[in-house]
Image (cartoon, rainbow, N blue to C red; front, side, top):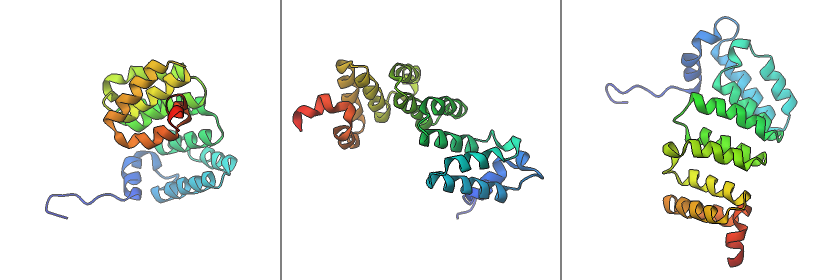
Length: 185
């Protein structure tokens, strides 16, 4: 690296620096990383109860870290508990207000939980921040589709595609837009 440019931190080093005050004597950073990795493995294998149990065994001061909360969200999503996942994701989103992914995931999980009105309300609150994102408008269009407001759905899908033409294939394959594209298929 050039003079004055810091070397990028490894994941383990980021965990150590970010959570040094939490990790303390009960668990060091490499043990925490090992536990997180094990939980991810359990989730990948579909062993959700084991994954949740491993998270519960963590020291209480580590249970509130973004990494652990994110793993709880993944477990809830895998279990189909989308509304609970949306509430946890909302908490993460508020603690990381610059994350478009987290903000959109709140709405995605609410839409998956079959509460499209709540998903749309969440999205409308963040329009000033994310309104220039094709992904934002795509998700708004999905909500309007489920709510049977085809005019708004078309408007937001058009905006999404103007902002991000890469979303076209996804839209063509999305059952939310069958009423629009089904006539061309």
